[in-house]
Image (cartoon, rainbow, N blue to C red; front, side, top):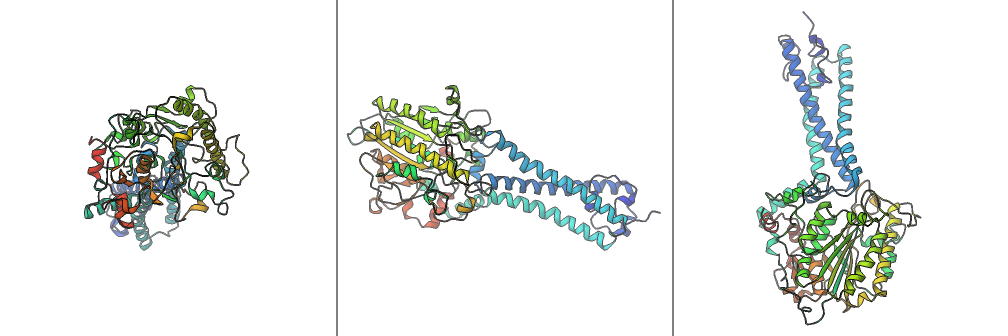
Length: 549
């Protein structure tokens, strides 16, 4: 009779698959019991346990790999950002194929390869230990116990790390709080009245035009030349001397990416993707090859109000408008023309970055022609723009001077130079005489472990979004501390629209003091209550906004 040590090798079947020996052949059997076990069933059970064990280890490794890629590429994100921006969730159309390849290699290929190599090495080591007579009896049982613990701990830890990276806990907590407290965005939402037709202005005067420029990832901290190598905002600060600003414009709780910035400042609500709230499915098709018919059709946004008042609305952006449903949002809410990557390619523009789109220099050169044509038409217009150069990863164009250790510092300064040149052009052409202009970051800089400014901004408190505002009538900011939701009513009032109680969306205009705003708005909420409101899922409310598909 063969001597039995509890190993698969000793049963006469030395080739039972990689690392079958690490996992328990039959949990609970010791060496003496295994003498009574038929060899073939034992071999089959060993294969099953080995497959299950290494599959669980692989799942944990892949979860950790994906989490590390997300953190290094985007930083810690939210469920909504995941669904609307990442590859497979609406993120196609910008960022280039490289981001997809990097995600697959870093998040899937490398972790699986590491697990396979580890499985092979462990198998070889265990066989050597058994042949040397080291793994016997109590040590063999300890080996089995360790295998069981690892089979539980590794996948749970990996899944937990991924969950923390994509905001699963915040998502679940928001649902729980809403169920317990009844907190709902719908209780604070006000849809502004859309004019039935152009009436020559809401106060009997000619309506003012609007130019709204979103500056990719630009925040106030970039002016700090003690924290950074240079004051990156110096050109635009100089160009906007005499303009006003909202002193503390904050990114809304749970925001932090371009579409969240656009939706919050133009609709006064947090962006909730349809796939994150329940049965509505249309937004799931973003980037999947089928166009979205409408984007938040139940919301009344800035473009809807302006369209009702007869404004001609044009959007200029260097990237693909299909990215994250940007084009669908714009066309759903009053935009007449969208000039994006495809448009510039058809015009034979050449100054592109391969991962995203047209350079800021060429975008603003094209914008000069567009704004002159709009202004000369004599009709009210709204021109919205979105810059691109300061998007990760860093790319320095030849027209930019690169004289800093961190490339993004030079890139940002160069981009702001293009913005400043456009602002100077608006003044020289007399366009500022009848036009409201707002420059604002679309969100704070994403702080990712592999991105720019990690050391300078990671953990920094009190960060605010850069903004400058021009109005020919002047600007009187009465509430200096607002977030992106309140930009929406502020813009409408700057244009001369009269809002009931100075409200639009869930926001309250920064042009209204507290004694001008009635009880029952977001200004009455404590910091904790407001944070809970901003993070609430408000499922029924969003079903209505998405058309309850």
